[in-house]
Image (tube, rainbow, N blue to C red; front, top):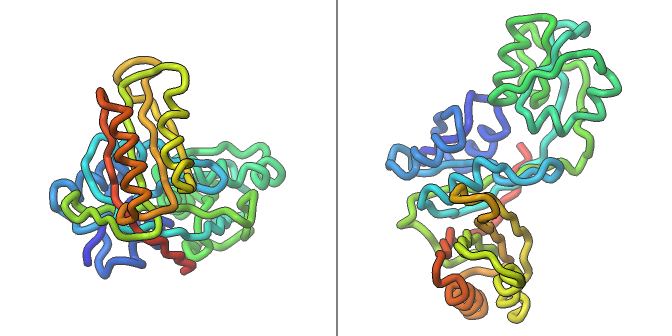
Length: 268
């Protein structure tokens, strides 16, 4: 199996993708990863969808609205950050914005005067640290190679830090089998009680919602798209009935069934 994910090599996305594919290639944005799947360049795409500390990844949610793909698996991997550098005296700490945010307490306490530089990935931060001894990187401990060394481990604010990734496939491979399902709902309407109407069909059928997220539709101010994860497979009659009911409510909009899938936990 060949998969594409955020690069360069050595990121948490790389670790997640390597767990499901023999060959992994890289793109510089989530949108580019999704487009590679849509265009048939890659069999699978692996994108971060949510972090337990910093919440959902907006670019991933938006890409699932703009492009018709299937979610065929969820991968959950723990995030264990380390401070990596050539020397201990640091003027700048570089990493992905979410990684910097996940280590805010450590950085405020140990490096309050160091500038924080947001880069495209944790691996990109490591590259900067390799080039400049005054730069440290927040990344996986295993990224410390060559002249780099781990100055501190476990620097994330919470030990429970973990990231969910979606494994994406072409829309034709969408499945109704699995323990969870994901939906995108665009009501193209806004009135009192709308959100309650959209959620009631699941509550009435005893289906738990594990995540609900609203994102601007981009059409106009105050217009939203809703992302739902439900703890039921679309093969179940209750889930099918609930989604059918939602579709009848949003007649002027649409509902996209991203698919049903199972969850895999990847530690290394």
